[in-house]
Length: 260
Image (tube, rainbow, N blue to C red; front, top):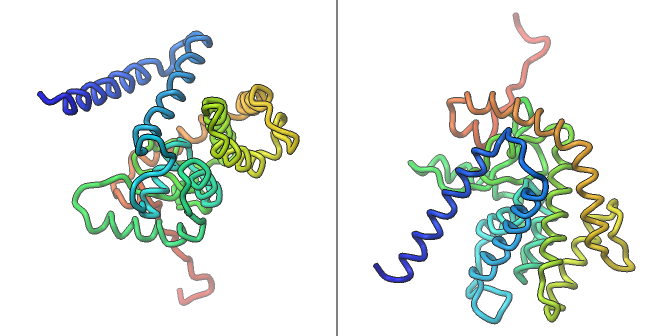
């Protein structure tokens, strides 16, 4: 077997094994130190994947990627539903692109048409859904994410934002010291989108303090948020229409005062 095919097979098996291990860990009492080590390893893995996706010695890819592929790339990196503004800002900072929020305006509508025209379901950019399973406004998600992650409850937008900030803090912390360009770019994004978090100020970024603030705020609301999202996800899983599962149920207008 060629070495390239062997490496790809090894990576596929490793991903499958990790997913199975994480699935078995759900509901278990896992040591916090071990969870922290896993989280750090996953951050390092994301950085490695990012490096593999670029040509050697540069922060940019060869050729011009589509808006769709750039959005998928940013969402995959951030790992949570995110606004168009943050998606664009993050992608420009990390991948040196020219992605603009306006480019995302018609994307979800185009994705719904893509779903209708294909027999298999690719990775699609989809809206998050309300607990009533209607399409929510403002946040983009990926169709391959679990149902609960694609739900936006009362606290979900804040929880998602905190996780996105934490991912960016990890990215900043793991940047090579000499990479001043990306350090300045991601610092600017953090200062713009993390103004309410201690440790982020125009005097600089204290990564440890900001990370502690994020973790503290998540500890206060994430458990309740996850329970609400899981409850809605159970209803979502019973929805037989794949379009409704991914893009939400269409709202029906009730006529008031019409003929009886």
